[in-house]
Every structure is written in C-alpha cells, then in structure tokens.
Length: 44
Image (cartoon, rainbow, N blue to C red; front, top):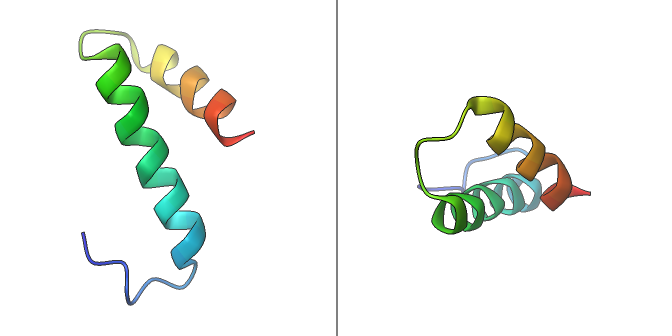
C-alpha cells in the first residue's frame, strides 16, 4: 500500500502494521470482536 499521499502517514502506518501483526499471530476464523479487542490493546 502506498502511504505517501496519506494525511496522517505515521498513524496509518502504525495501524496497518498492528493489523498485520495481530492477524499473523491470531490467524483467521475469529469473530470481529476478537480482532477489535486485539487492535485496541495494540494501539494503546
């Protein structure tokens, strides 16, 4: 993904990086709420 044109480049990078780390650790098959809680913890 090209983030050069994003308004909040650093924040966008942190969110995308966190998403991939969580997805790689948990894998697929969980309810959305599991990923939502993991993202909340990762971004605190």
